[in-house]
Amino acid sequence: MSSEIRWDKMREPCRLTVDITVPQALNLQEWGLWSEVLVKQGAWSADEAVPAGLAHCSELELPFITVFLRLSRWLLELGRLPVFSPAQFIAYAPKEPASAEHQLVFEVPLVDLMPQIAYETAVRVARDICLWMADHPPTDPQISNVFDAVDRHVIQALSSVVPAGKSTLPVLKGAYAMGIPFLHLGLGVYQLGWGSKARRLDRSTTERDSAIGSKLAQNKVATANLLRAAGLPAPTHGVVRHERDAVAVTAQLSYPLVVKPLDRDRGEGVTVNVMDESSLKAAFLRAHELSVSKQVIVEKQVPGVCHRIFIWGGQLLYAVKRLPMSVQGDGRRTVAQLVADEVQVQSRRPPWLRSGIQALDETAVQVLKHVGLSPDSVVDSGVLVPLRPIESTAWGGVDEEVTHTLHPDNIAAAIQAAQLFGLDVAGVDIISADITQPWHQNGAIINEVNYAPLLGGGEISQSHLPRFLSALIQGPGTIPVTLWPTEAAALQAQSDSVQGGRRCFFTSAEKTLSPSGQNIPMPLNTLSQRFKALICRADVDAVVMCERT
Image (tube, rainbow, N blue to C red; front, top):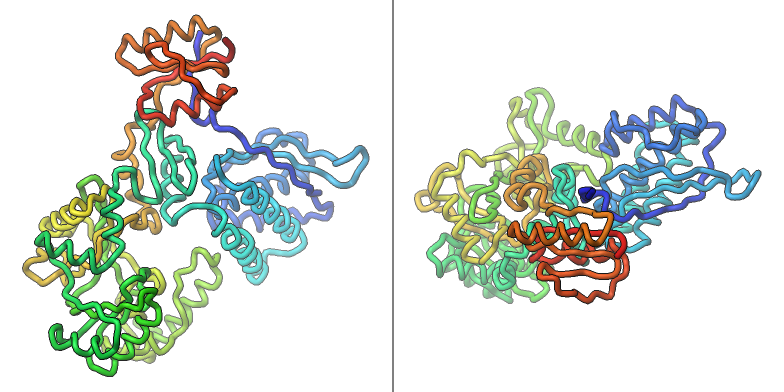
């Protein structure tokens, strides 16, 4: 009799041991409040089951160890390790007989090719935070201290250690929720699915994205040149190295202008609404200082707002209107009061969830002036008040979904642009005054074609992840894998599968056979290792295994 192997059962656990003693003076009421604070920030769900194996724990040990295990898993995730399954309790016992010091042993899923220090850091910080929370009530300042410690000692500390882009964790978390297995291949590249059903992902990009296309897309001038050559609407600009050349370019372009570094992204060094020579020179100096190559783009500004059109596999996934950082009027408070209140609200959130809004500064005042407002203005309820000239990664912003209002010609242009660059996944940015109108009627342009666009970074994008993954992976992405008690039974199952049209492989810990029965030499000596080797191959439709030959 065979047994079917589930993907989560084939994941190797990472066993962790930590020295931690439950405080005997633990205030259970305050501890429950701390737990509620963490649940509110998404550390775990309020209805998550208590880890198995804790039944023998005391009244103090049970809640303390439960929070520690959940916090450890959450910190691993915040540190960009895709550890989404609950931690499994193994043991909590004195380090030595009659000792007051204790050791806690537990397991979390192992993420291959990840540095051990990432696990050690998350667990150490979780221990220190738990012990600190046990001695402090959950007041606003103390809660802020906890979040600041997580940001500093986990998120920032591991950002240079754990390879992962901003899209990686949201995509993998979406895959986990859909039961799609994943495997880290190194350098932040993951395989989703097994064998012939597998796909490979780096952030939001797939193995089908063109390396040449990505190279072109990451250069603003090359992007514009290729778009223009293909008959698509592209920016009109000049590339200059000196201030005098920037002034000369305006003779061909005329104001208003956009000035930006040739080789920076995230909106760094970008100045819009340049209306005269004085502001042109100031914008040039700012962009020139930030440019690695000391080249600056002086570009004809077109009216409108940037719209990110996310294309996958030659079709539209979703689109958003990218509005600058703003506050919303309420008909009562001045703009200055709205900003101050929102800054205060954001300061109480974890650092990694803050919007990035800042107190009113000169840039915000100038933007307000440009739209006919001042810090003392009172704006009608529901009206957005911009505080920055554009949306950017550096400044933040507000996304508004426009997926269902895009004009078909704009969708077609975005799809054509992605295909022009050979990108399976692309974020095509169209600047348009009205995205419901075709680009060729209102002077809209394709400003950028983005390789590896952010996916899953906000609520709108996250809502489209299931559709993205469903199109990327067939079903759960698994192939039939069965475990048999004897080699003879496994080989018979392989033969039946091959006759049924599947490329079925056999493996034990000692040997692996192709569908034709040919031995496949491997420098591996465990069943788990050989199974992992097979699911990395694109020619494997099924696997039969036996533990011993």
